[in-house]
Figure (tube, helix red, strand yellow):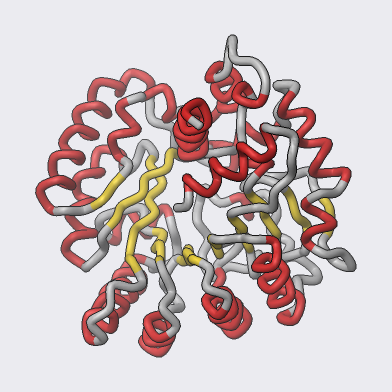
Length: 355
């Protein structure tokens, strides 16, 4: 990730100028072939009536390149490969303009042909959503029958990549930590190594969408720390990259009051350095419907149809959100955000202090 470039552009804003986004997050579709028990779609099962057309998706890529975007996260929403033809064309267009890209997928729809395509275009990274080290746990959290298909896709992509003597795409797991799987963090790291994944990226559960309580009990704090330390040792031994160490700060496992935690981070810090989150100044998200915002979990924004990315990025809605963030009034949906964002903000704040 281009944190140095993000810091450089944040400095432009901090000094009274304006700069384009560094990062784009795109949801090609809200449709999915799985029924994960903690998914946002459980609250909103109606599919998006009219998703962005293939031409509109490709236009967004071209305009993003003109704005100076350097990296992409193509995810969901739904499962990007449900809308496979359009998604693969988007990935190819991103690489055509020399931008870095990450695809998040549940892996169940990825074929060997798709794997060969990703290697051929030089796609940079693929993150597979896998939440358990075995069928029993993963398929309970991610029904129906996703584990074997996802693992097969990981192995296939690694095999095809190795056949071509390529280092791309970099292969990782995305794992949602919850009360069912947190004791198996070390097992997830071992599984990743076994099947050819080079990274396990952990994220705590957002409990708001699940019908059952998946939060890690507060009384399990000591056990969680032991598991995290063991996972860290195993990752180091096996050479698997991971962010597991972040969870030694166990209060970050509770996402129910994340907005307050963002605000606590900047208590006593004034000016631009004191904004709770820098994302409105460097990230633009576009949902399958065309609704766009200036963060990852946005619920306030405007539709991209009939407008250029530049118009939206510098428009009234985004500028109002930035003004409110400067006033330490982040939007309500920050509670649904990620500790990854909180940690990234810490790093960027320190980088800005040094420039």
